[in-house]
Length: 130
Image 1 (cartoon, helix red, strand yellow):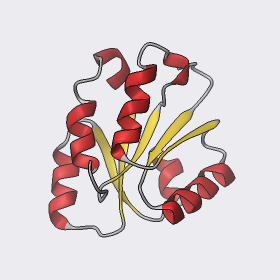
Image 2 (cartoon, rainbow, N blue to C red):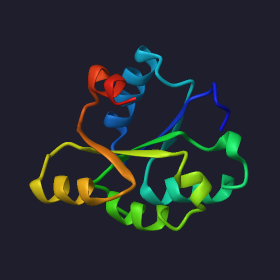
Image 3 (cartoon, rainbow, N blue to C red):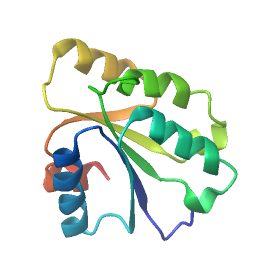
C-alpha cells in the first residue's frame, strides 16, 4: 500500500449498491482505486491472492453485512486470520441497508470494524470517517 495511493475494496452482492457506491466514491475522489468484489468469498480470495503484494491491497474495505454464502461477519472471521501487518493498515467499514440493532451491536463489538454505515453511502459521512 503506497502511502499516497488510497484504495478501497467494496464487498457486496448487490449490483445496484455496487454501482451507486462506486459512483459516490468516484465523485468524492476519496480513493484512487476501487476493487469490486461481488461476494464475501470473492473478497477473501482477492486478499489471500495478493497478501504478499501490498501495492494491490486495499486501505479500506466497505463490507456489506447481508450476503449469501459468506455474510459480512463470516468475512470478518476469515479477515482476522490474515497477517497482522495487513490488518493494521486496512480499516473495515460495514454497510447495511437495514440497521438491525443486533447487527449494529455485532459490528461495534468487532475490533476490526471502525464504523457501520447505512446504505447507500453518504459522501459526507464517508469523508468525515476518513
